[in-house]
Length: 486
Image (cartoon, rainbow, N blue to C red; front, side, top):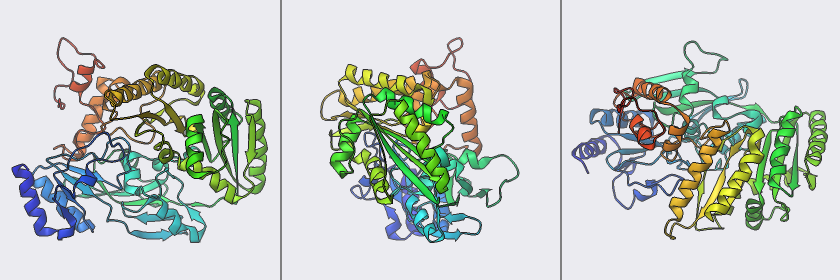
């Protein structure tokens, strides 16, 4: 432990109760990684404050000793955004988990960052309201982490990502000031810092309170399952549905491998002979839903669906969605490890990109299960491998990089809802040029000039990109010499 970190530990021990400070090597192990388990690091110190006052003290002490802080929510992130630093403080916000207020008249909820995503909808249910973004990990993931990664979910097509459903934040800066951005009104004066904070991965400030928009539960809904004998046909059907002017609440795709894994895991009645299935949820008034259901069924059959069925009741609809939401753990039974990617493409490119992923799978010998938000083109290919087999992890990572490069090449982006973290730093070099990256670094420096908040995440350095050959170097010198190189 460095002298600075040792001094921080001593200072924290004076102001925090014993159960809020973890320094034992064994007790720190659960914090070595988030959901991206291939990337691990032992944290120097783990801190779990129980109040905003305690949180402020932690930030002040770290700032005074120039020790890095890595904020962490529930640890369900999939890009290494919460990877700790050996000479830093891992700041868990899990104990800041109060639902401060449910305001049904204004259809908002105010919550602390450690509140679970699903807990918001559970608390609002007695008012016939719900919180729309619903990541597959919603039973465990926290709203603060959702803000950090701008998380989505199966209903993001119609209702949007976290950024579209969070209307206010309180953020603790590295200087110890609390910023209030957004709020309960429809608009706020000044720059839109609320949008900037969503997806900032804990690099600009620490979220201490979140105000979310609550929506009325729809009067009716219908969930359809369509089976296809070619994954390209399923991809084509997605574009046709949107092209018909229908915006489903959710439109999800699973390929043959994912379908079989989910069915074996939860037994929900998926067709095992399908090469791919689409799950389509429609909601609204009863008349609206019935009209859209008929329209979607017609589109699906015209697109080549071999089988289409609508859930007979809410219980069957929940079973259909259960298989989709259980797909990630279900695929985990197929191989010792899997590498989950997260890129986004234009919907029209789905057939082409899915075929390219299949070609990469054949080339590398690594199986891929595709489970993703088809409606907004947010891909989640799960690359199966065995870390105990020499070279397989490296092959999986290289394959993932090629998939992300393909996403960019067809007009997409390297992330949809999982963030950049440390996983996609190299991929960012292929998407953004030097001037854009320089501007990102300037925004970071405006909020955190000492670089203490979650350093080394989300934005690659210019030197890193130049070494990868993803940036033009003028006369042997890097552009923007005032920016970080490490």
